[in-house]
Length: 161
Ligand code: ROI
Image 1 (cartoon, rainbow, N blue to C red):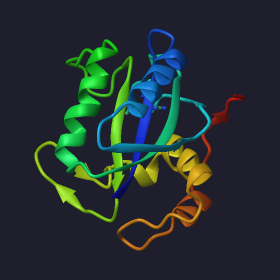
Image 2: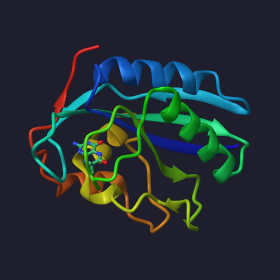
Image 3: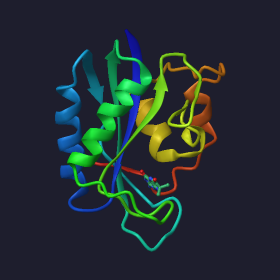
């Protein structure tokens, strides 16, 4: 089984509820074992600022599925939750599920870039990841706790359960 970390984000249509539903759906995935999810975090939008704040979290699952099959399933979950792929790059979204890490795999295909290209710069990814996997080391050999040391919080707020 591969250890897979998924980044969840939403900033429209009751974002907390979107994440609740996404986690419920991840718990039902075939050939996957849901291990845990981080707290939810309120974060400032990266990219255009004329959009609502986000709620972000990271989920940890184990899976036997190949990466692109898992991607098919996570994209289905996004669509079921009303995700409309908009023309605007980096605009508001009801639910985003990003494959952050897939074991130690390095993947560069038209559909998938793993580790996720923004991972190390995004406080709303690194701090939730640090919460659930403090010992995690990226395929590059860099420990996420070392990334976190130098990453500004940018108003990131862990929300109570
Ligand atoms: N900003 C935050 N804070 N959280 C996100 O999940 C997020 N997702 C995005 C962009 C638009 C880049 N900004 C984000 O896709």
